[in-house]
Image 1: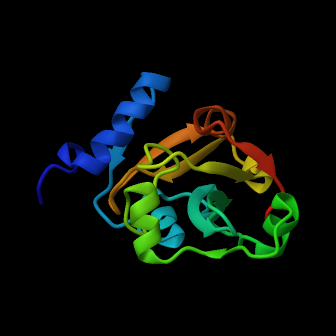
Image 2 (image 1 turned 180 degrees about the vertical axis):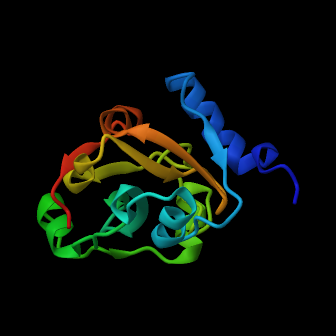
Length: 159
């Protein structure tokens, strides 16, 4: 397998992380982290410590929701927060177009387009969480508080 750290999608994440905090590193896993369950198994951690990056389509734009791996994003709660009637999951083409990543690789950072981000407060149960880094076999570890700062996001109850 080629060196994943050299892949363009992973390099974008590495650059954002190193500009934010040089101690944050992308790790390459021997097994897939495409799903939260896969990532938790690979990392030997709780599924809830895995950050799921879910792109939602709104009436006029997109929003990225960062949710704990053991939770489901509530579209109804997101609709209330945004004060919108129409919010749905983005399709694979929209995910790639807005984030620059494929489903299963979506990092909370280094997107193609500027995207508003909501972080679910249930992730705060963990001091450290793990997020995708642009490839199904790459992740980065970050504290919950750093994740909020890095993504310039708003903490909400969205599950």
